[in-house]
Length: 377
Image 1 (cartoon, rainbow, N blue to C red):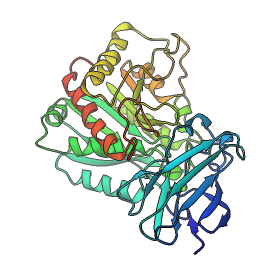
Image 2: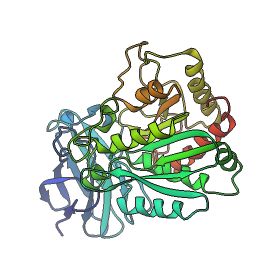
Image 3: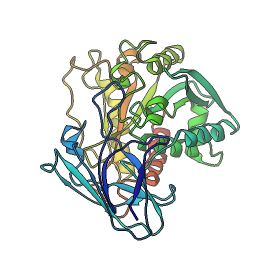
Image 4: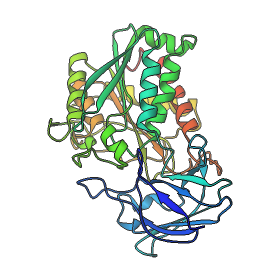
């Protein structure tokens, strides 16, 4: 039986170049109106037990070629339980080739750069959270294709907390993290959640880029715009997603902000701060460092050794949300990065970094916020 490959579904992305029995040569389509490409998501129909060999070529020209070494592709046979397939990378073969080998027990297998988070699951997440007592849904605006930018709001306090995810749609770990955060915050019996809802007003945007998400983009929206380079001058024509969120922030103010992301190359969880902003003060920075350092003590899934270089004062790129929010509101703002690869400090050969670990990390992040709520805001 010759295998059949399709990516014609929510979040799908792959182009079939050739198929020979149970082997295939493939490449990843670029984001619309953009040269970014890295996200893949496709299914393979085959005979049970077939020895699949799937070669994705041209990856030295991808957005982050350093992300392919020591990376193992995600695979599922039921789209619920995701594990890792045997994967190798040869940068010198056909412009960089990632080869995935897997023998499914059934007749179908799904492969993805990370466990997908579908728009349908997003709507289920939003609906379930909004049905919880004390939680309301507000539509902040629309995307270029008319999809809603959803914001879940909860809490009776006066400290304004903004959490937003998936500016880069292929970073699906970000919405898995938000799912974990909402599970905790909507739990009336969780003591950290109860304290946070007493002292804070939460504004949570689970997916800032639903157009790019459904199209299988890595990094951009329908217009080919990288949303996390639009925060200084967002426009209705290129980045209405950022414009509506930033306008809502202006209306409420921001006392604490976290932008949730994934990093292709660094095999660790880390935080990036706002050291380069012109208005930096030690008092503002100490709030960020207090949060970062306590999170490192709380969970071994987080570390401070690996991460991005710290910007010199006055050199911050204010088109990026963390820098813009910290400068604009004088608050502690940060970018949380999670890996596509395994976590080098706590490797898990079967699962790598996983949806379950994203959700667990969210619980730890919120517990730390609860413990420092009066110190960091």
